[in-house]
Each structure stands twice: as structure tokens, then as C-alpha cells.
Image (cartoon, rainbow, N blue to C red; front, side, top):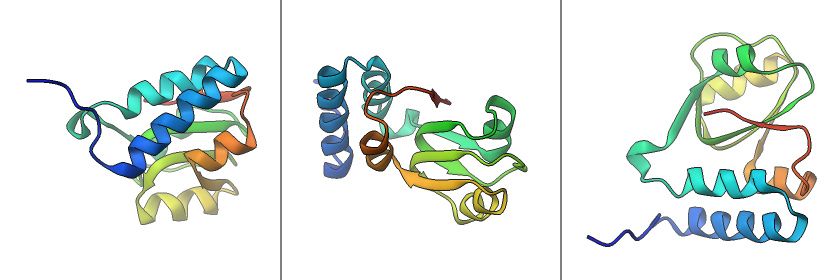
Length: 120
């Protein structure tokens, strides 16, 4: 069977945009995020806010190429970009003083990918 990639048109456009920005700016991190987003949906990443709390420091940019879930606690103000968020995760991140944005917004904000951490 031939591999076709994601069938969701939003994800396909995002992958295309990430590869383009990666080539223009020499930022390999966006190419890596595109590779993770091209996985089948059953292998896509799901990260809890407790893991974001453990693996990050205050004021950092975090990319989750999948969904952020609300299990655990977070007490650091971080900027989290992901494909999707649960309602509890949004409440906890905003309650800790952080921000919740989409991956394309983070790419526009930081096209070089400096000081961005990918959590899988």
C-alpha cells in the first residue's frame, strides 16, 4: 500500500508551510516538526501539561506536534503551540500565566526557530 500522508487539508497546508519556512531560513526544527505532523493520526503525539512543566523553563517556546491534554499541573509561564488543545489544558496554561497559540502563529512569530523546544 502506498503512503499518502495526512488527508486533513489543514495539516497538509501546515506541513507545506513548515517545509517552506525551514528551507528559507535554514531552520531544521520546522522540518522536524513537519516530519512529526506527517505521521499517521494514530501515531500522533499527545502531551500532558505536567510533561510540559517538567521539560521546560519559564518564558520558553514549546511546540507540540499533536494535542496538549490537561492532566497534571503547570506553574511556569510558557508559550505553547500545538495542533490542538483540550479545554482543561488551555485553562491550566493560561492560569499559569502562559499563552496558547497555533503552530502557524509561532512560525510567523519566530521563523528562525530559535529558543523553541519540541516536546513529544
